[in-house]
Length: 255
Length: 118
Image (cartoon, rainbow over all chains, first blue to last red; front, top):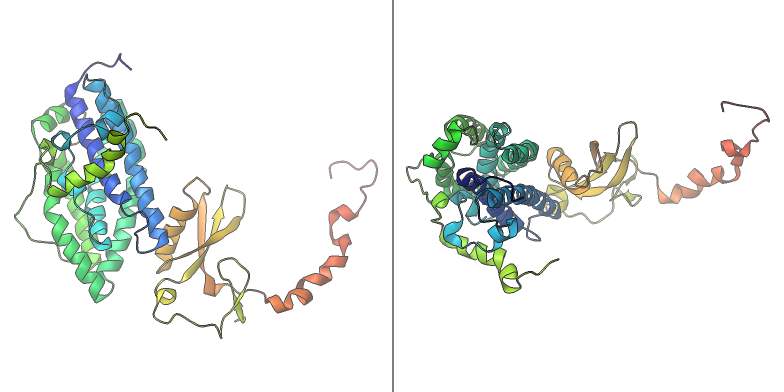
């Protein structure tokens, strides 16, 4: 464990990927016992567990490489809001089922080319996680596509609600494709995926589904951002409280 | 069409004369029977049922409900209303006659001495 050389850049990138997965997994988990049907309850929890599995490996990797020796649990349960580096899209309240499904569509359409690209990352742990996640996220995309098409091209009410959900989450997708200094550095090292190469495929997938679902691609110039720097939305504090309170109230408690 | 169909794998229900849930969940989320093939070379086996709006979603729900612990390599879903079931009233006529015919089982016969490769 301690023989791993410190590499804070790769650690920060693994943390971004891990935070994205853990926070979205937590949001999906909130659907437990609240889905429109029992079958969908299990489906959403399956998706949640896929994200949780990826998050565990990535947070462990981040803790190994950042030189602090923190475990996956330390990173998940003992960090405060400004230390989280997930994209804002992941933390948005799930809203109704239609909104949850549009967020699923936007995220899965992004993560599929992301994990495909990261399968050949020069960081072996990230590449390993990506290799497994590619298959999982291919199903996430299929699941989201199935629902968005059925809701969009369903009844008048389902169309109205899924379009409203899409309008709300859409502006947050732009943050997924932002580049900063860390990314430039890690793209050059072959560790990170280049968002500029992911965006065309994302757009094609999403627009294809939305067209089939008779939904309108929202027009907006508002580009909320800040998640990667730890500037989060109001609801994120409540998410962390629920995620962390057990561990913080009973340190060292185990199952 | 028979007067009986499958319901949740629990035998047979009449296809008419039962109170229906017009416009409710029964219509928008009909019942599907799920069959899983656990390994190559084995048959698909009935494992249970689920509700789904259409065949596409039924297959995905089946994947999520019945194969999350690596139970299978292939899935079938069949609309429960498409299954023709035998009637409980016909149980005696259908199945009892086989009861006193043990000679239909290979174990009824003694294997001749010296026979190999059976």
